[in-house]
Image (tube, rainbow, N blue to C red; front, side, top):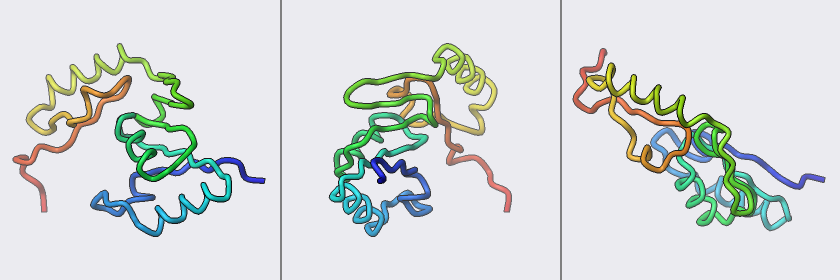
Length: 125
């Protein structure tokens, strides 16, 4: 008997623009109606995953920051090393700020940081 279902959000429940698929939402809700706890997983920050968890009606835990942060029944477990991540972040900001910018989520992260390409960066065709 299935008791839990772990589902990736990005590119699985969403399309390439990051929009949730309504059929996927209904499938998750159907699983929950059948007593299967849905666990959401994402590279996003925990606050994003928990918000989606609430609005989608999922009862399972949450996996965030590419597996570096786990949430279950109100308890947060940080598996990643924040000091190492902060040093990597410092190096990226120092050396690659002309190519990337930090994600708006970084102030809300525990052990992983995200970067996105700068809007003004020239792109090869």
